[in-house]
Image 1 (tube, rainbow over the protein chains, first blue to last red):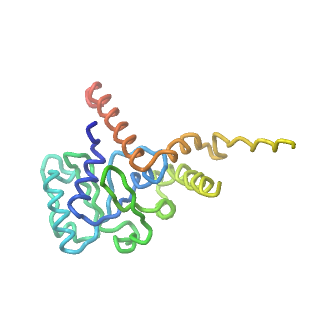
Image 2: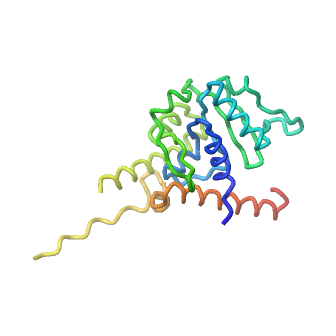
Image 3: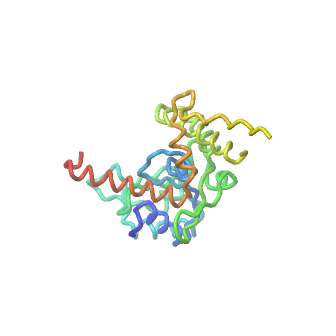
Length: 165
Length: 55
């Protein structure tokens, strides 16, 4: 069976050796929360080698800024070296490339709060812990963040119950 | 010997209204199966949107 777009996008990043932590709704879903999401959010390591690898993948995926569909603006190394958010569209769907999360958590800060998951044949990626994702959503406190918190918290409780039993 | 009582059934909904059966079903999958599920649903939604003129 053909692989879906989310897996193909994660495979492209993994196979290119890009170092990143998957965050956002997809991290919650891969950790077991039944939430739907159509975009991939990553926080990447911002050293020159990793930025070069990431730029190569983005170029292969024909990545452009979503906010300017009429003007095919592409991310550059200086964009990826900043702590800003690059909201992109690619031929495999939406990809948000984040230098750091709100509050300044960058790749190095997130790494101890992440774990590796196998999400497809030979595709192992680092994913933000559910506990940390809940903490970030609580701090953000926006309407969209509050809406998903009950499901995330109950998922964590159910997981803890399963681990106890 | 007397049989111990069955454990109380797990609630289907949390006090704040979250469907716990969905959470248990999703937790029973592997991460790879969860991703496949999301990919399938995204493809379904895209097909439905396409049939309805992109709406």
